[in-house]
Image (cartoon, rainbow, N blue to C red; front, side, top):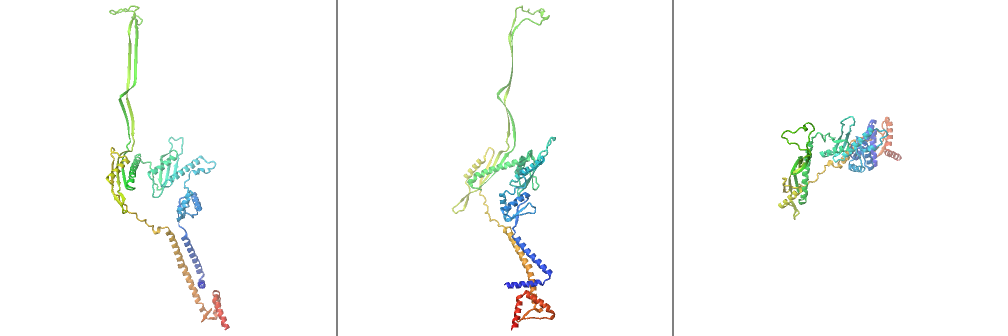
Length: 534
């Protein structure tokens, strides 16, 4: 077999030697290219498919993640943007678990650790304030990113410069950009939580000065919303939560009786959100009380003698008909006089009360409950469904009334009925994963393409070249005896000498034959010697 292969290679070599130099060079280049294509196809087939591990990482995080993957023994490569790390598809979850155990990545924001860096000598107060503000923004971004539906966040705080010459200084404001996970959204409660979180973390910042925007540019909170609209939304939320609370209480108390999933309850609550303020002033006439009292009393007592104002009138005689004055030495006595004045003011008992009725008072409840039939297993092992007795429905109604605080005075209504629930169809088998989506298909396709490419190179490039070279070598051998170098006729060696002008060419051909096929030339020489000896 080795002799045959050597003979074939010799024929191919003869055919190659008969080609021009430029064509020989082209064959060398084509052969090298074919080998390179085959090696590249094999390497591409056995190279694993890389998937994104983390993206949008900072240079610091990329370095730490790469170091952690190297320590964990996971191969990786960098993406085109420099902030993406790729790992083999089968190692994505394993790599994330190992990096999470190392606390990586630490995040894109810079927090208060920036204050631990050496600021150097001579740092101004402005730079210190700017570093503190940047650190506060980074810490708020990390805190907001820890929420369930938030993938990442950025916070910008605008602190106006205070001045003593400004009568009304500007207020601090902040803006938050949140990156929400695909397919998720933030409700009003979560947006309000972000607003109050930022407002409570920054001094002199009110909740109205915080603006929240998502990655699509949608404004999530608006200060232009009227107060009435916000109050209405809060009232609607409160009503729904109260109705859900009553429904859960009904289902929790009846589930042990009828089984889990055997009861459905709905409650409609009529709630009065009217705010009433009342001021009442009442008097009690039965219990009067003295408010104020003023008493004035005058007492007079003593003798009254003759006297008067000194002068001429006092010395004149009395007129006619007037009694003569009493003689000297006598006196007139007057009785005592008493004057008493009293002023008394009464005040009735007065009560002033100010009452403010609380809003959110339940005015009426409408309760609807549906109970499934009883399910019992008979002797044959089959499930039998039987309706509940009216007495049981009545007992369930009483339980529901007690659970929700039923009040006939308030006008509450309740309706409990027994109805067989529709049996859901049995769950079908899980859908099979399509062939093209299975994990091993991409690798198999890559190996198959590489194999096809190698076969194309072997049978489409190399085989035609070798066939052509072999054909040229055979043609060259077939023409050698006709030119008169060496030949065998009837098993006897002979020298076919052509014209004298071809002797030089025959000699060259004989040397070539001796070099390329020494065994055959040796056999010819051996035959010559035996013939001469005979």
